[in-house]
Length: 95
Image 1: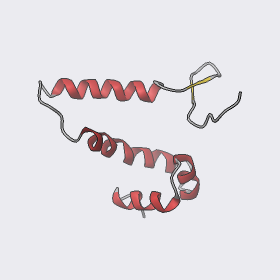
Image 2: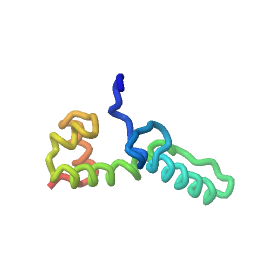
Image 3: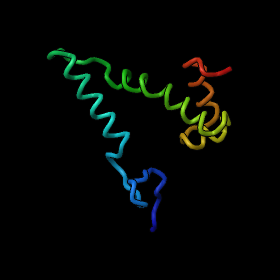
Image 4: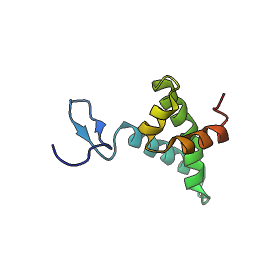
C-alpha cells in the first residue's frame, strides 16, 4: 500500500477505510436528531457548537489512551504540544 494512510480507520475486517466510519455515522445521527429538535428553526454557529461538544471528550479520551502523556497525545491528535496545552487549559483539563 502506498501513500499516506494516517487518516485511515479500521473497518472491522482487518482493512482500513476513510470517510464515514463509526464516528462519522454517530456524528451524522446526532446531528440529524439535533436538526429534528429545532422544529424548523435555523441553527446558528453550528461549527462552534459541534467542536465545543466534541473537543473536550476527544482530549480526555486521547489523554486516557496515552496515560496522560501530552507529547504523545499531541502527536496522535496531529497538533503541537503547546496547542494541546492551551486547549486543555481552556477545557479545564490541566491539573
